[in-house]
Amino acid sequence: TVPQGLKAPSNGVLLGVDTLADGRTRWNWRVKTPNTYAIALNVGPYEEVSGTYKSRFGNSIPMAYWYLPGEKPQAEKLFAEFAPTLDFFESMIGPYPFGDEKLGVVETPHKGMEHQTINAYGNAYAKAPEGFDWLFQHEFAHEWFGNQLTAANWDDYWLHEGYGTYMQPLYGEWREGRARYAAMMQTQRALITNRRPVTQQRVATEEEVYEADKGGAGLDIYYKGSWMLHTLRGLIGDTAFFAVTRRAVYGRPDPKPGNFRPRFSSAAEYQALVRQVTGKDYGWFFDVYLRQAALPDLVERREGGTLSLSWTVPGGGNFPMPVDVQVAGKVHVVPMTGGKGRLPVPAGAHVVIDPDAKILRRSVAIEETQAWTAQSKRPTP
Ligand SMILES: [Zn+2]
Image (cartoon, rainbow, N blue to C red; front, top):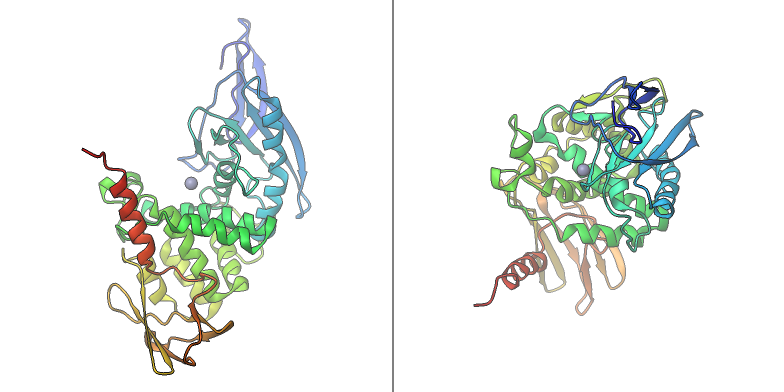
């Protein structure tokens, strides 16, 4: 119940608005399957832009954006992003999980939050070279990775934030191709800190995961999670990667509106799905990227006519990650069985390791850049 003239957009379906004798209004909302941390009441002098999206799955999805007065042109531009973004997610991942309720976004004083069917938006209509609003896109990604698939333990919240962050470069690729994807991935790469493992393998609280000073991986669950998914996609291929993603999100390979419900998942289940879909055990991959802080390091040696490569990984386990090597303009795949590999390289031939940056691995240049940036931020005496 809100004062006269205010609106109260919230989760789910609006059953009706009652006007009380004193002019106040009562907003009645119903939510079928609320994610418990994604419930929100928003009260303000909102104006609304709305429409209907015709889904490729045959259903119609109501869309609405509640914004503050005086912002109509910007609000309509942001609203125009809803349908193409929804088409991207439904094409790449699967049906919008709450199509029988709505796609809802509401403007807020805080930056953003994935409140189910009423995403908070506070990005001030910021413009970016990629041509879409990353904050809206990120929060909306959480409808799949957060509200449909919910991690049972905060320790596995890379499933929310890693996927939620990977969806922006993937959308860049969908809209403009590989170059945009690569540029956006490189921006994220520079933000990975590797101070703590992404998961601690115990039941953790939200603070113990999101806050670095409480022992959490902090922003690495976003950027390192995203780069881990990028690396996995390169390793197992698009067909397997999106099959794993779909099963993790919906619990089945063939989601259609009405044949799935929100579900809980975990890193352990995700790893099992990768094994199930590919027929191979990728425990070595997750042991390093999820359970160790440091990144795998590719040691290169060129002697005579041979390039020798070997992986050094924290924990010392086997790491048979194949590596692309470009020799004089031609790309070869070095299988790296047992974590080592060799390639004949003619004298004088120019060599580029992993020319498409498929693999998340140690970069001395990024470590030095981060150290230099931290140093140059210190006040000079
Ligand atoms: Zn997020």
